Length: 163
View (cartoon, rainbow, N blue to C red):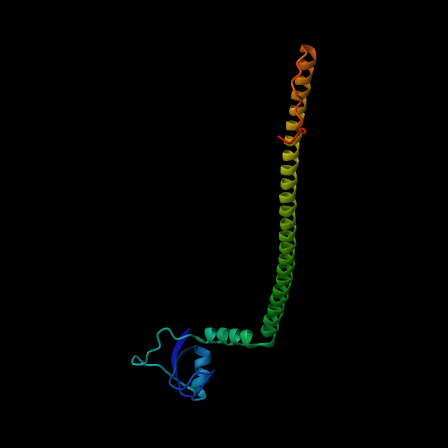
């Protein structure tokens, strides 16, 4: 059975005049020590934590402030710090890889441009060779027909390929 009481002396961090609830046995012991009085109808004790809640709160406070809890927090923070360091190292390595790949891309683009230029030059040279060949074939054909028909037309003195 719970008894509503008003503190007459400081108790567990509560000031005198604070409303609390106690088990009957605890209440009787505290009354004998003149530490509490029974709350009357005029005293507001609604929603007052009972002693079990206060004990749980004290345990929780000790757990949060205790060395074990702080050591656990420190270990977690150190773990997170090492993870941050590892991720930073990975990011740095990735950045270096990206830069290497960008340089390789630039080299490949330059090589491609050079190959296109070489291909264009080769195509132009091939076209010139074909024109020269066509001119030579035309000249040979003209000479053959002149020889067969007795035509004495002058032979072109232009060098092949210089049209």
